[in-house]
Image (cartoon, rainbow, N blue to C red; front, side, top):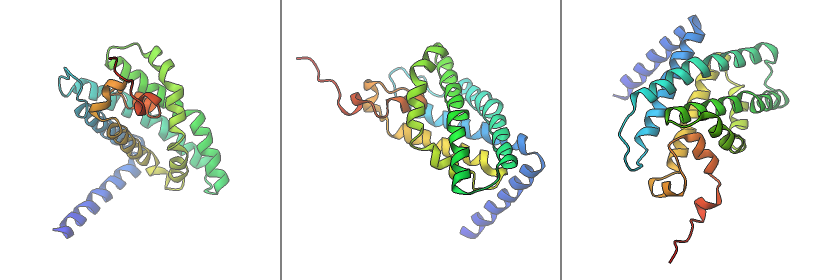
Length: 212
């Protein structure tokens, strides 16, 4: 059984690798659409707010295709391939420089895009949501993404976007796990970036004392 699973995995991997080498941007867009759609599906299914209607397929499609395929994948394809041409080295200084530039440019840009998309799909105004959440989300992202980016820039260029998508998916799952249903009244939302802004909030660890 294990041998069949292993064989199947390597067959799928080899086909994916061949497709990636033949059409890198297209495959990255499809992969990003799938992973981000799956992330939104998990987020929605983990949302136990009162009145929750179930899976919103349209919202998942907007996030997966609109953000994942059309926005995230092409931008990160250009960023990672450009770094691969201009600064291919993997010394600590080189990795730190690339990670620092990304943390000050593309990472906040993607955070703003995620906040905007999530706000719009929930019927809220994107600009106030970005204003209220972007800086805190970015400062919390500093905990995770600098070492991740330094690791990503050590792997082959073709796989960097896929790796970033997987890290984003697991980060979102962590945020969902860290915001259990019994704490939703303290300000948690179903948007992972807004969860990130509240992650270190004092009210999470010190709930208000009910009035007598």
